[in-house]
Amino acid sequence: MTIQQIKTIMYYLVIAFALSMAGLKQAQAADKMVKIDGSSTVYPISEAVAEEFQKKTGVKVTVGESGTGGGFKKFCRGETDISDASRPISQKEMDACKEAGVQYIELPVAYDALTVVVNSKNVWVKSFTVEELKKIWAPGSSVKNWNQVNPSYPNQPLQLFGPGTASGTFDYFTEAVNGKAKSSRTDYTPSEDDNVLVQGVSGNVGGMAYFGYAYYEENKDKLRAIPIIAKGSTTPVLPSPEAVMNGTYQPLSRPLFIYVNATAAAFRPEVKAFVNFYLENAPKLVKEVKYVPLPSDDYVAVTEHFKALKPGTGFNGTPEVGIKIKDLIKRIK
Image 1 (cartoon, rainbow, N blue to C red):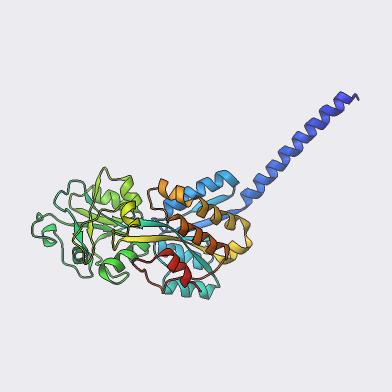
Image 2: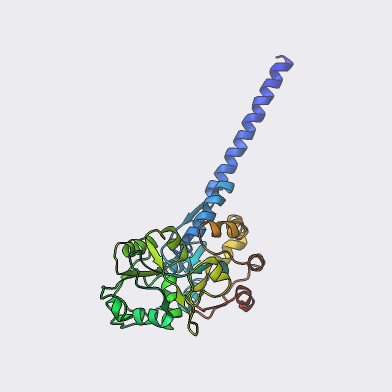
């Protein structure tokens, strides 16, 4: 055998080894998986992050959208690694996690402007006060027509669409508007799928709904967002990233969360890597899917909080209007 033949054989052996190692790494990545479920509001953010993370690492990430409440049920049974949530974990969910031995790390990842919408052909509503929203959505409300909301409105049937009771958006809206989470009239068309709500309102001239800002942005050619007048104010404010950041869109601005299984974060490198990737890329990807990124110093604080792997929540089991991220993190003990 000549020297040239030996060199050729060695060359192909090196190539074969490199290919086998690459295949091994791909197989190892494919064996790893990060499971996410929960809020349909947070879903677009987590889905965008998951897509980018999978491209970079090859680790499979599944993202479901069974609603905040449905997501927490799975999370507290240990079926998922991360739970998307559009409101804080409730006391009942805290108890379920505790009973199952599941500890969690609470991480705010974005802001949302919960948006009240009507049909694009509805030209009579110029704004809503919080009191008018409560008149419409309060338990036992008898409002059936638009002229019952305001006598200047037409005698047009009011068709209501909204999140199901397992939704964190439902919990936050009822707390902010009716003064108590889950306190709402029940004679409306519910769905955990925000696209169903969009279709309902866009197909009914008298339709009305509320959901996350991103779903309005995607469908603003067939819906109208209604400005909200906060309690004690006379100024109508449209939902927008600017209004969220300057604090004028009240009381429907809210933080969005992911809850991370603390054990998975500590002992499974793929989960820890995914969450770090999530927080590092959130400013860009949150904006891309039409939500509102946290201020940069808040992302720094949230990232440091995750690095500490500090479990717990800064809430007492109910949504809270107007909370600041840094204050929230300081509460977790």
